[in-house]
Image 1 (tube, rainbow, N blue to C red):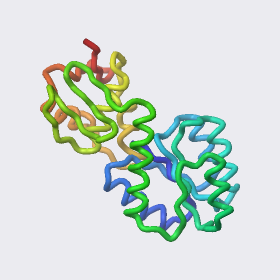
Image 2 (cartoon, rainbow, N blue to C red; image 1 turned 120 degrees about the horizontal axis):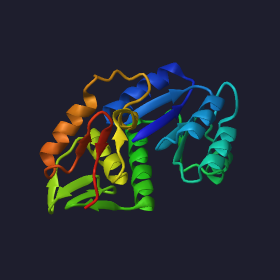
Image 3 (spheres, rainbow, N blue to C red; image 1 turned 30 degrees about the vertical axis):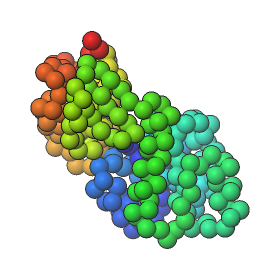
Image 4 (cartoon, rainbow, N blue to C red; image 1 turned 60 degrees about the vertical axis):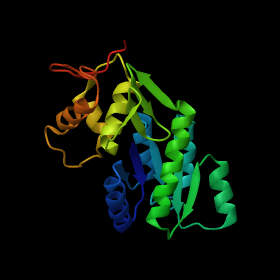
Amino acid sequence: MQILLVEDDVALIDALKNALVTEGFAVNCLSRGQHAITSVKTELPDMVILDLGLPDMDGLDVMRSMRATSVDLPILILTARSSLDDKVAGLDLGADDYLVKPFDVDELLARIRVIERRASSFKHSGLTIGGVLLDMVSHEVSVAGKTINMSRREFMLLKSLMENAGRVLTKESLESKLYGWGEEISSNAIEVHIHHLRKKLPDRFIQTIRGVGYIIKRP
């Protein structure tokens, strides 16, 4: 899951990014509202965590613009504005959740998981191809009815491939789903994840298109 964190507090950015990456999320960080608006228009993340007190514009205006781009994009407001009027305004304008600073990181992670499950349920609760079932609510994968243990990154990689069954996904596009901007990535990271996935899935379930990328073909 790729999260766009829009926040201008450097110390908070570092702490949140470390916590989210540890949980297996890909995190991209921006400190200005206009940059965040442009980023969302260019490529939708899976979720936005948005501060309201940004240096160049009010976060509510940022959210209005993001909502104009996508009505379904999950947005969690993370702010020091704690009045009831502020909360009502944020939620009425389209925020999926509203968390007031200071906050506990475990609570933030729990709220992200709720939004993640809600978004998955809205799209579809599961994908099934060739005996492989990927359940996006429980975050479990089963092969011929047997549950398979997977890391979050393995799950997200398989999810991207199964959602795009019949299409070749490049290594670069898969990296963008699993890693944040500027995150140090070994040159063979995707190949290693694919190697581990193939051990857990039926033979030739994930196929390599040499020089291009990877594909899961529909039966």
